[in-house]
Image (cartoon, rainbow, N blue to C red; front, side, top):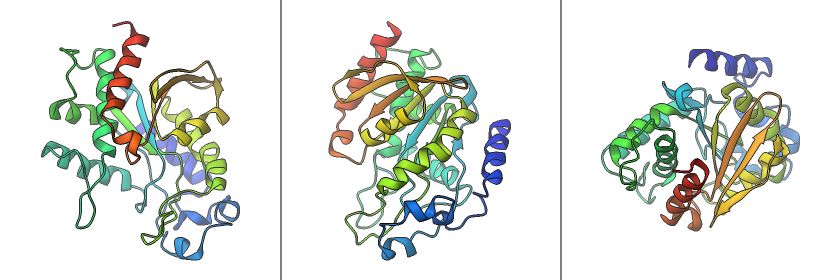
Length: 261
């Protein structure tokens, strides 16, 4: 894990990313923020952060990428979110980070659940009779995964309908600038991509093979001279399609078809 973090740190430092606070002063800032309202910019003052990397990540190499941090930042932010998420999931919650006036998010429960299904297929977790993931399995899964985001900026304004929504320019710039390099360093075997648009931008980063799908869950091989992995595109857990437990059924069926079990 330290070797991976050192590799990431070297890349971030080479591009001055860890010195940026806020992130909207990076080399792509003029383009990315050109059409963002000033009110969303002044509330977006967090910096760059490392991906979370579980202690046993290299045994499974499951990487999850969301969209952005939606109001969090600075180097260890992802690690802090993981600690909070696993604590609440261990208490039986499915929606985590709940606060007054906010129902919470299914993000961590769902990304850990999808990871459990992969861990079963690669025989790190027992297949059993394929029930929905248990709390114990979710707790175990956190050690075998890494978590990052495709967009490092998060235009923030809780009073806006566009809160945290990246601009087109952010989608066009950030994945090929930072995410691609993170993937090359982390070298996943399996990439869980949350969000339809998020999945579609991967094709701009790597060579691709034909896509397979069941329902709303898609699978595609991405590769180049440095990486070769299977990516799974799943509707984001914050969307109506992503909250449905049907996505978990579809993901499991897709994996069974691929692994032949």
